[in-house]
Length: 137
Ligand code: 5GP
Ligand code: ZN
Image (tube, rainbow, N blue to C red):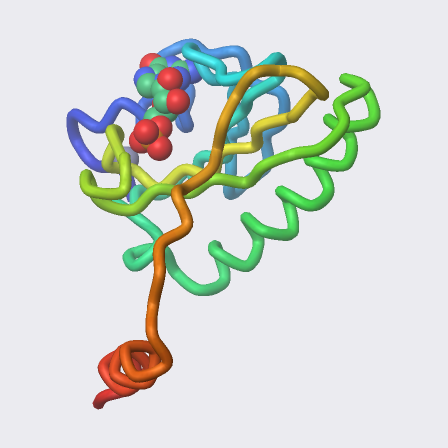
């Protein structure tokens, strides 16, 4: 099901042109317009889901299988040295388009990109408390 005024629904269903590197019944995979590196691509489900939490389980599973297959092909053919999978959920996490997408970002030695975080600190007691919070029903 498509959502009105969703740009990735329109791209995934061919209403807005894109450079597509793969397509099947469930997904369109396009090159990102603002690539982090050469070959940066986005896996877009054709049915609208705002984020991972709205995505049906079977589509989520298929997206990861596709990432594995296509990612390997991209690394080999682009002669990349590695690949980051990035998937943002919510504005606080950096999501700017509210239609689920999985970033495939080929990485090259010395590509000068940084998909990192600053390691913080946590005590054993805090970890225990966090664990209990996550697991509460
Ligand atoms: P997010 O920050 O939501 O995880 O990622 C959104 C991504 O979509 C960004 O990397 C951005 O460059 C890309 N993007 C946004 N609009 C378009 C578009 O119209 N076409 C393509 N190909 N990529 C887009
Ligand atoms: Zn959409």
